[in-house]
Length: 621
Image 1: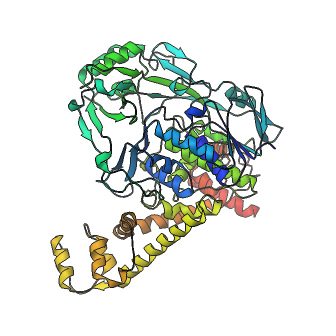
Image 2: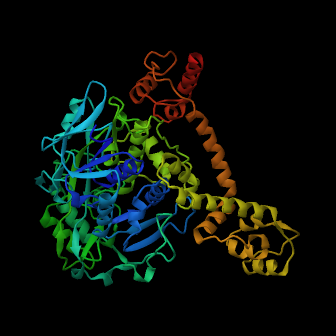
Image 3: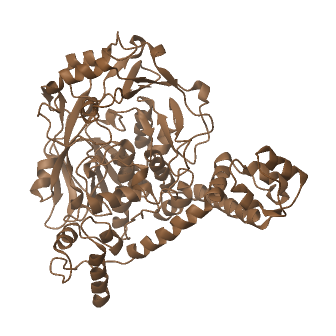
């Protein structure tokens, strides 16, 4: 074998997969069409967001690299949903579109066990049962024990602007040709999705006074648990908020037939939760205006990304649309918007380990799985890299549960429910979102990262100390009762609480709104020896204030875990199993779930069908 693992594609998924394999000690080859586009951000210049920001924290807790890259040279860091509960709060950072990919490219060059080659993969090397390498456009063949496809939006991709159709990938790059039809020749089913990007406008041609400023959030905020340097909010670059106008809507309606999407040229399905501006006007006709965020792309360019204004209109119509926006009357275009259509593999083809069911040794990660977004891609790439490495090592795959991570929620959703549109993570998809918080990703996943070999001993020791400190502090708070002390009474009175009637457990006091750990700790000498950072203190406060809800979700998760622990034998004949509904037989045979828990989450499989499955497993055992 030339290599142990070959990764095809150098986007967010491919880089995480390659880094994971290399860091786990496996000789890895990364094939990319253009080295300078590795880690590129062809759409929004940001990392994080609702649910996505928590995924980045999970990637870091497992030992991935996206969080570290996002903490370098960011333009702005913001905590979202601060007015809501901790289950939905998350980070979002405006990235420097030049610095972010450069950081990852330089890291790839320095990473031990990792080789990067500019090669376009057109087919796979395989026998009747296994995939063991790739063949490139230049005629080179490379062999490996596992291959990971992370092709993003490049496979057979086309760019659309009105009637203009180009055989291009993102940012006008060369597309990947040949691999998709080859996969179909192997019996792997593909489909076609569509996404898009807004125009980029020259900053000094915009009158920002017509928008409202959107600054970053104060504090030591970071995606990575290892980050120690932070950019003060005063040095961060602001974004701005504006709204579409009635004139904007009129222009779009007048030219709707010229849109590539509504003109019939695009056949792929677009993302429901990140629609084009013309889709918003059509689907939400009652809305008088739609919000748009003006986001800087780099400290070194004057490019502004108009978030929320994705379109596939012709260039001349785009100019009319943009110049109808407040402050954009004299807008100068740096890049026109476009829609992009691409091939992907349908989710029924792969299992929860991200391995193609029909072809052992072939893994996939990122948008080829049916997702949208840099963060989802990176999470899938990381898991594909981990599982390919574990297979090489002769170990069981890592399957994260729905109560362990958003990454686990995403993969479970894809393999049990499939997707008919680009899948996007949202907090509403996670039934245990109070357990899957921004603050506790390390407590959930660092031990797992250490077990697979991605979290090294020095970091793991620091994590164990933090975990021990949290447990000890909570124990002290629960053991210590605060009586009728003057200073305690004065503090509670300042917050509007009535005076205490006898001793009250310190942990119970911390549950009250606005009560802070730093103030309670002043009354408990035993806590003097603990040096806790702001994030750890916040975590202790959340554990206290939401204890009842957290305990309830843990019990619910334990019930689901019991079903996930019930393995379904590989040779189960779902089609001929007596008692199963016809729809359940078809769905179970198509997806081939590994556990009863996974089977229970397949649409069309009802509780009665699950009872039949459990009965048959018991009989077989």
